[in-house]
Image (cartoon, rainbow, N blue to C red; front, side):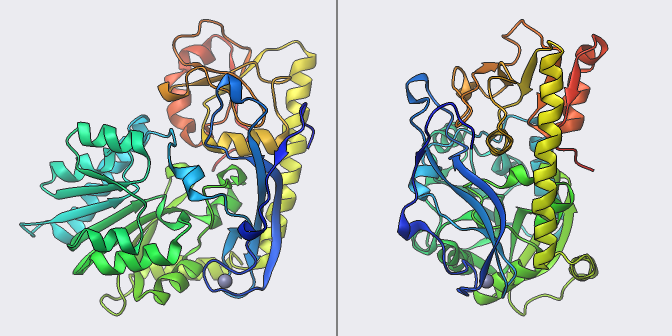
Length: 415
Ligand SMILES: [Zn+2]
């Protein structure tokens, strides 16, 4: 690590993972080492700069159940108390949420008159609004205070809590639909949360989970999806292993382009429904592509090291030519990339961001100042795009800048 300050390393013994989070095996092998990194979701106030703790960020692979996972757990109270990601912000995501709600309704519940949905990690209620419009009785569970408050103010009833067996039981009711976009499988209390879903899912209910697909992360070299909040990474095979442990099972799944490659999966009580042909095909594809083999992870790690070299070469040449470069977007994953690549203020003057909550803050680890898009008049020669998963939206929205000769460089290039 080549920081201009001495990072404060925190590595509590009891937080180092020595047994697989899914199957308890101790046969874990180091797959991807991203060094020590600060918690990527905590953008810093000026007085916090340089004082943020750094934690290990390594992916280990379970040789038994094939689950890639972090070998260190930053406490959930640190990570999920006040995160600043608001799902209502990007149009791509909001459209996606609408499609998801309509789809599950048409597939399973269109003819049902009284229907209900629970959204786990419901954020500001964006997903639930779409269910509400379709006539669902909606409830959100969200651990972070600000988004939970915003949701309640917008008329989406939201309980501020961590989702686990206890908080699920306390709801004292069943839901036809349980939705979890993104966050569910990253819970520290994974097994308790899975039991919680088993508890509240109606007999004919459908548990819909969207998760980052590790197979796609590797294929797209989207290593910046690895950060402390993502404790585990899923392919269909290890997901099924986890679900089966809790009396649940996959019955359908398909690939979605969100976040550069996610899977939308449909789960129910074990033994209730047959696997769909497209799910079977995806699971076979994993085996054919060696997705669940350790050697595939080692190849992935090597490609990440090569990407670092390539990116630094590009940025160094641009700086030597006297060009100014701004980061485009300040997503959490951008911090994994910036810290691992060692891209800091010597390369990027600012990060241009739309999320108001990040106004005036600094990126953790690399300490690049954030300015709000549209309020900042200076233009760079190059935008270094950290929010690369919104590539199409960003290029379309900024055609006028591209016409002026401003370059948009994508450090990670999705398919
Ligand atoms: Zn395991």
